[in-house]
Length: 385
View 1 (tube, rainbow, N blue to C red):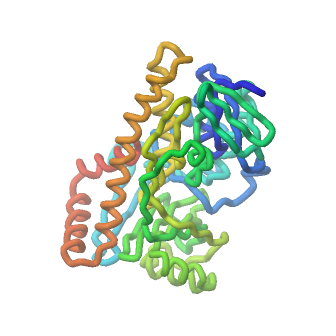
View 2: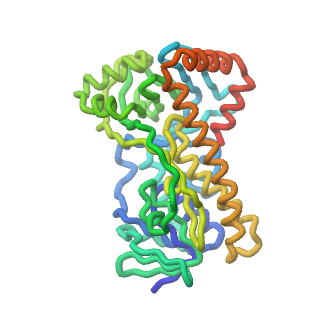
View 3: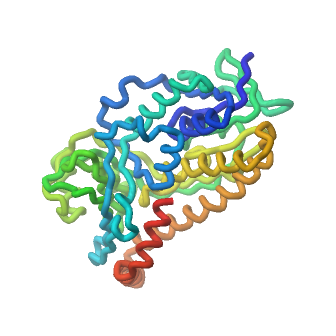
């Protein structure tokens, strides 16, 4: 039997960031992950990307991770163009609206995870155990986590093993959930015209299509959220036919398109844990909540979980008594995430509606917001966290 003050289930981005944050505060940490440790992450072109906002960037800088990111793979975006495919009403956001160098960064998951693993390898307070799925959790009379033949005791279990969290299931945490009745298709596409560090999103009744600029000025990552039946149909198209379909829905804003990666698709579902905390455990990231990707907030919400938790710990005088910190964490994050869930649901319904009142309302709303510098600044600051 082994002991570690902090046990983390899941070695995804959120779990790795949480481990570094806890180690920086003097805790001994063990990370258990079901998957093998990936090799040569940075050499792989990765169609899965994250939009990293200012708050997430600051957290990674505080943990000395940002400096380890492959700088040539970072893609800062300075402009956003969002429009309604039915009415062409649009809104533009620019870094100059708030006087910053950029609005955020597009980062491949592999690049971010590679930097985090490098940092963790340098930290003697963190032990990482790949291919160690959590098989049993007990919290009475004390926390005990079992992985195969290995047993750990600890003071706190931090659950960050993703949307299909096995640890959450073992803790019998109930979820509020509903299907968005959509699937997302993601891929990397080469574009005839340069993206000029601009992120694009067009809303159609079938679902939103986003183009996220990559480090190569002629490559973007697409996220196309479609009604499930259409997603299956479009996913089955030959590459050339698929590119033509995307180009049509995107109004050819970047010219001719070509796939430079395989396509992937996954169902979209809202999940929200009814409890974020319990006796010696807590949920973070996708294990606590998943939302629609239309605003690119998924990972940022997970990193905000970590940042909030670290602030809650810092406010406690006794680092070994985490009960007050846990209660404060749940109180802050459940409320904040519910607001985001409600906003995403509202946007999805408004822009997915084909009724004339809805079409008129969103057209008027986009036009008014585009003419209001104050409103644009407000939305940018909210998106930057």
